[in-house]
Length: 160
Image 1 (cartoon, rainbow, N blue to C red):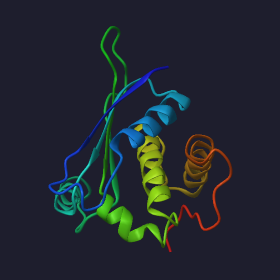
Image 2: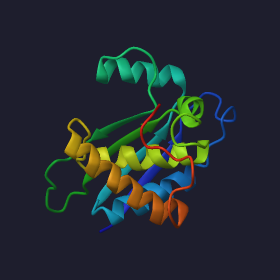
Image 3: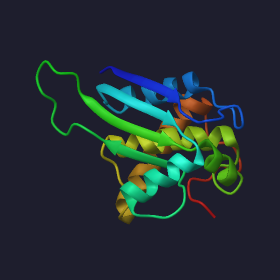
Image 4: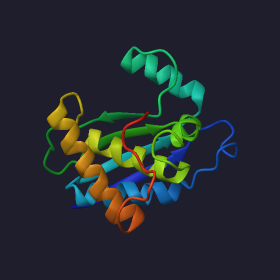
């Protein structure tokens, strides 16, 4: 299985909250490959204004959110590259919630990349059993691909 990640930083002022786009693209690629994702995935970092617009347009919610996922091709077509989908992350929101969520900004971005990817690959957390499965996959991927071991003290998947 091969996943190609096209990553970009589309924020007007990307230096305000620095993001290592290549690092997060590599995490998304490794996680997608581990989860059987075969195709192309986009990973885009946006500012609060863009995320607010996307959240209103696609989710019907006011204000910005941390991550949005947009799955694409349901059924691969022979000979045509599969478009897995798009993950959009707002680093400003991630930074603001990191201490009450994943613990650090670094771990927050890693969690959002993996969480978004799992949504693109069909996971959900609408029901308790789906939530448990998705969180289990998140922890497994983060432990093996981000931390190289168990989660650090203070890491949380659920927000306070």
